[in-house]
Each structure stands twice: as structure tokens, then as C-alpha cells.
Image 1 (tube, rainbow, N blue to C red):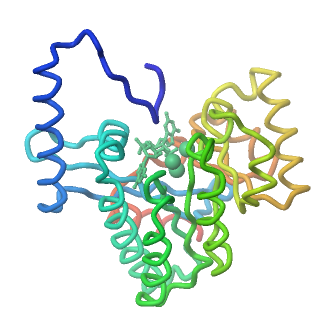
Image 2 (image 1 turned 180 degrees about the vertical axis):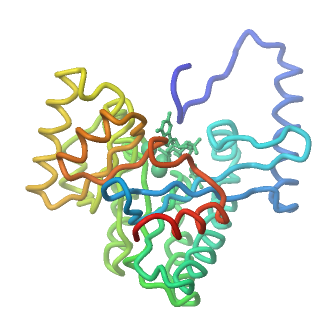
Length: 275
Ligand code: C2E
Ligand code: MG
Ligand code: MG
Ligand code: MG
């Protein structure tokens, strides 16, 4: 209930059972990596109601006993125990493999956004892998976007700038995810020089009914335009939200268009939507 990108230690919990669960989950995660239990879903990023301009890769854990597990339930833990670099590597490889397939089907301008965790951004090998993968798959760097979460930036600005500067140098787009949920410091915008900002769905939720949020968003959109930063509004769920944002000419993502779905389902969507 406290939101995503958080974890809690329950101090009054029975210590033994806490450790048992911890060890069990760690074992299962490692097993899951070895057994290839992860899959990527994709959610379209829209330009207008009928045009897909890009996709965001969102990981799922297809657990043999517990079924589909959402990233919020295992990513913070995987990050904590140091497994995120390995999982993130797989996300990058699998995402780019699939993107190449779509490019070969004729959807040449399709872009892919990938979420990077803090541990990945701090690890130099991640950038090297991105560059190598793009070359080996023959994908233009401009077709890849790396999403960094606003709250991860806090306190690590230098390391993260090193990572994002390298990305920008080779032409990979840098996107600031969940904007508005962290400290939203304008200083970060100046230092990181992101190509795109994704406004968190907590803003989209209340438009156009809430005057404050609507004014805040439209003001931020104007600011972004002046700074030459592209905007994506996340979490568009209703017709009213869509109409309001369409008037502002912004890119959008949300259940109103499509939930995150499998690659096969995306291939079908690409055939029915404008592209
Ligand atoms: P995110 O990057 O902000 O992704 C958007 C999340 O909002 C996704 O949740 C998506 O399913 C959900 N969403 C999209 N449209 C709507 C909407 O209209 N309404 C509502 N209520 N929700 C919507 P999901 O897939 O559960 O992912 C949660 C978070 O887990 C992501 O947030 C991202 O931070 C993280 N994540 C997912 N995949 C990866 C990954 O491969 N690597 C890393 N490091 N993090 C990932
Ligand atoms: Mg994201
Ligand atoms: Mg994210
Ligand atoms: Mg987000």
C-alpha cells in the first residue's frame, strides 16, 4: 500500500521464518534465472489513439507453482540480494532480440524502452553490454530507450550521469521514469539532460477533474517543450484522460490503449493499429 519501489523489513516478525522465506526466495530466484522462468511483456506507447510509436518491456516471473508474479514483487528483493544485474542482462538481450524480429517484419521505426535498476546503472559492464548488443543485433541506438527511475537518481547523481552520458554519446535515449513521485528536482533535469520524461500515473489519475493536477501537468508539458524534452503520460485509463492529453499533443501509455501483453499479442496489435 505504500507504493512501489519500496520494501519493508517487519521487525516484529519471527526471525527464523523471515530468514527461511528470504533464503527460499533467493533460491527460487536463482533457480528461476537458470530455468528461464522470466518472460517479457510489452506495453505500447501511443501517439494519438491509433498509432503505436514504441513499446516498453516489462518483466514477469512465470513461477512454476505460484503463477505469474509481477515485477513489484521480486525486483526490489532481487536488487537487494544483487541479482538484478543478471536479470537485467537477460531483459536487455531478450528485448533486443524481439525488437529485431519486429524490425524485420517491417516495423522499422518501432522503439523499445527498457527499465534499468540502480545496480545496473552503477555497473559499467551494463553500458558495454548495451553497446555490444546493439552492434551484434544491428539495431540503431536511436531505437533503444533506457528508463531510469527518478528516486534512484537521488544521492547517486554522479554515477548515474556517467551512465547516461555514455548512453547519449552513442545515441541511446534516456528517459526519466515515474517523474513526480520522487524529489522531482529540476537540478536533475539540468544535469542528466534526459530525452524523455514519463509522468507518473498519480498525475494522470486526476485529470481533468482535479484543477491542480491538470494545471501542474500542462505547465510541466510547456516546460518540457521549451527544454526539448519529450513527454509520456503514464497510466491513461479513461476516455476523459485521453482526450485531455491528446489536446496537449503528448505521448501516452496506459490500460486505455492496452495492458502489457505478450510479444505475440503485440504482433497482432501492430497489424491492427497504425504504425
Ligand atoms: P514502470 O516502469 O513505471 O512501468 C509501468 C507500470 O505501470 C507497469 O507495471 C504497468 O503494467 C503499469 N501500468 C501501465 N499502464 C497502467 C494503467 O493505465 N493503470 C495502472 N494502474 N497501471 C498501469 P508492472 O509491469 O507491474 O511494473 C512495475 C514496475 O516494475 C515498473 O514500473 C518498473 O519500475 C519495474 N520493472 C518492470 N520490468 C522491469 C525490468 O525489466 N527491469 C527493472 N529494473 N524494472 C522493471
Ligand atoms: Mg518504466
Ligand atoms: Mg521504471
Ligand atoms: Mg513509470
